[in-house]
Image 1 (cartoon, rainbow, N blue to C red):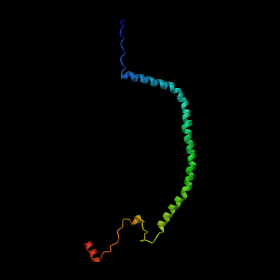
Image 2: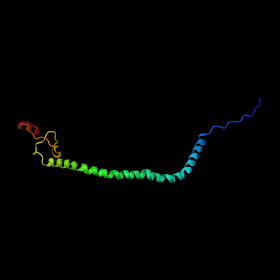
Image 3: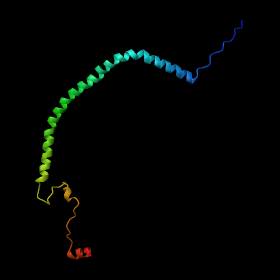
Image 4: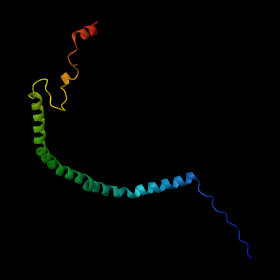
Length: 123
């Protein structure tokens, strides 16, 4: 049998060497793809910016039409609510479920107790 000299195996790369290799590869990719950036900018404008402008231009008239359709009923309901609040039932009479006006919210009911209990409370 023939004896061959044993060649030493290279040591595994250190973490720093691996980071250096990855950095070199990344830099190479960036330099190689720089010309593609010149081609990508018009593509971004054509495929992102222009569709956004077109969609906004289409949505604007639809929003205006929606406002024209929805505003009169909303305005009418608001007008009726305000009108009903001003010229409703006579003072002191409320319909069931209605809330007292803010000006009456803090008032207490007038005393209806007999005069003797009122005098005792005053003392």
